[in-house]
Amino acid sequence: MLNHLLYVDPGSGSYLLQVIIAAILGAGFVLKTWWWKIRYFFSPKKRSTELPKEDAGKINEKSGS
Image (cartoon, rainbow, N blue to C red; front, side, top):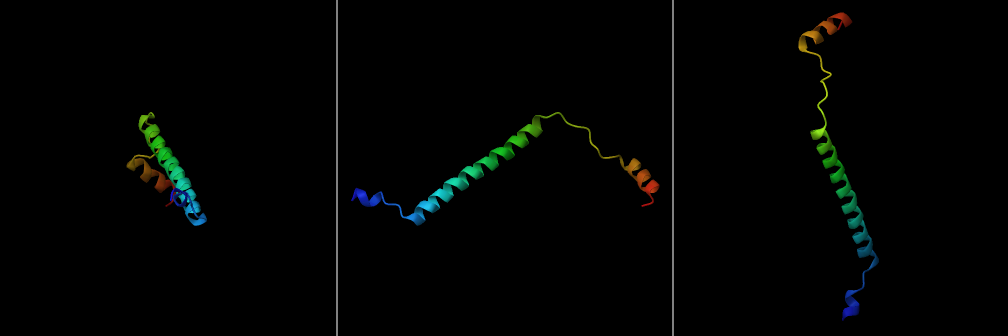
C-alpha cells in the first residue's frame, strides 16, 4: 500500500514544479516591493521639482502656449 502513495505521475510533478517556481518568484516580487517601500520611507525627502502655480503660468506665457 505504501508503494502506491509514492508514485507521482508526470502531470502532477510538472504542476508541483510550476507551483514551487511561482511561489519563489512571487515571494521575490513581494520582498522587492516591500524593500523599495521601506527604503523610500527612510530616505531623506528630496525637494519637489514642481514649480509653484504662479511661476508655472509665467513659463507658459513665455513659451507661447
